[in-house]
Image 1 (cartoon, rainbow, N blue to C red):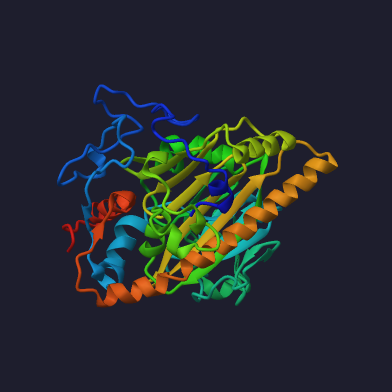
Image 2 (cartoon, one colour):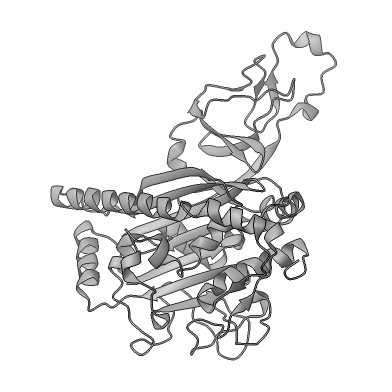
Length: 431
């Protein structure tokens, strides 16, 4: 969901005011019909899957008529849909769970529950590793402590110790276990990669690495979640709804006047001419180009300059990487959020906001940085509460709905999300 600050700065430039050039840092499309990083759907009565999309300079919303639902209401509650999404979408995916700063020294550890699996992350030799948090001896959790520091990687129950690679390194009274198959007693390990300060874990090995998964967006994310930006807000909540409901909420702006009356609702429905959708195989992006002549944008530029920040790009950019990663980029705030299923009708979200801390250390710059961070955190807390207020109601409605449902052009990024799920899980449209 956009930050309130971003919208306050959004004295919108419309299509008549701007050219079709993508924002700074993004690749421009080719117009010869070849495969490009930026592609948009041509309008068709029955749209093709996003993997067949192409760019059109004249498109703002790509589709010109409402779209059909690609998922059925049962896909938000059934065990079969839940299992299929875990198998085909989520177990092979990369999920951000922590920041590198969460592991300040060797021996620092954190525990998580990820897609039904207990995960232990620990730093050793400057490297952050992830393990299934289960001892190979008698199946006990190695630790239940949410975070802390330990001199060794050891089980809380009988003291079995493990090397960083997961191999058993010490067994108290080891003679009781002769002959001991040390190799088959290794801890199960998971892949770990980083992008900026974000630490990602993947439960199922194989497939694309993190850089390939994030594609052309990797470098932007890598720069954004690092100095001169600093983490000033984290968020961890559970919702009484299927994980897809909050994902759908964050990729559409249609709900703003009704769900965000105290934060974003005063802006009404943002004009179609002020925004562009970019639809790709693995992601969708929403871009607002802000009016650089407006006073709010000029003020934002001054704040960035006072803090010694990077060059301003004067855009609000909202990126959804399928299936469950969301990033937003502005000149002052960078934001990451992941949505995870807990059960078919319960979900969890983790989020991090990085605000511009800048490079200048003088007292004035420090005060400005703290005020900006505080404002961003308060705004995000309020927006998250407003969004969450409707999730359970939508889950209840889906359970009783006799309707097929429809998706407006303003909500077309939801259609691409649904289409990605449908194709990955082998479902027919709306079934």
